[in-house]
Image 1 (cartoon, rainbow, N blue to C red):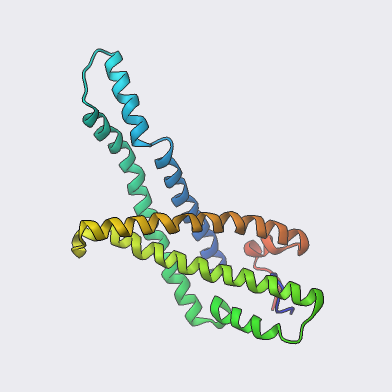
Image 2 (cartoon, rainbow, N blue to C red):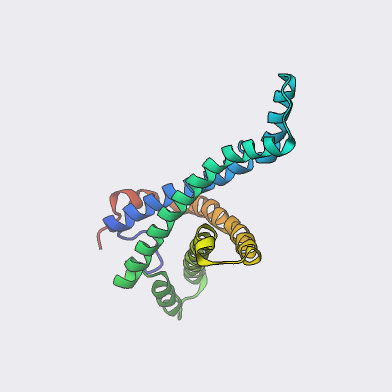
Length: 213
């Protein structure tokens, strides 16, 4: 089997993990999108205040903001729940990588880099692309680990005794790295579709298990 082929056997556990992770990440991104748009507390506070005034009811801006934030908090609860699921899946992925050399991105990347020696021309370009993709996965897992750790610090900050200043820094770091996950998802989808055109079966392999080893 071509060591630089994106088509390879996909064990059942790996497929279940992949689609479960895709579902959870999609849910997390959706909660972020809704909190920034439909449940944006600043916009909703203005809307609530204006509608109450139209009805002849006086309401302070602070109360309108608290009501709007109350609606937004539902998205935060979903975000936390999905974040916990994401953390569990990440732990499962780490266990998979430790238990099987073929499931460890770092090992397979180093092995691929070593296998590039002696290649030239188009074969080397293809191998280089394969290695770049593998490095992208490593960065994704590192970013995922960072998001889980900072997310946990945000949720359990009070119990951990974190100061307000440190909590604020962690929150800013969490939001700074978050877009990388979204960018990876977009690039991953585009890349998989393009690769499936070149190597038909890449997408279906993650459903039916791929070629036999």
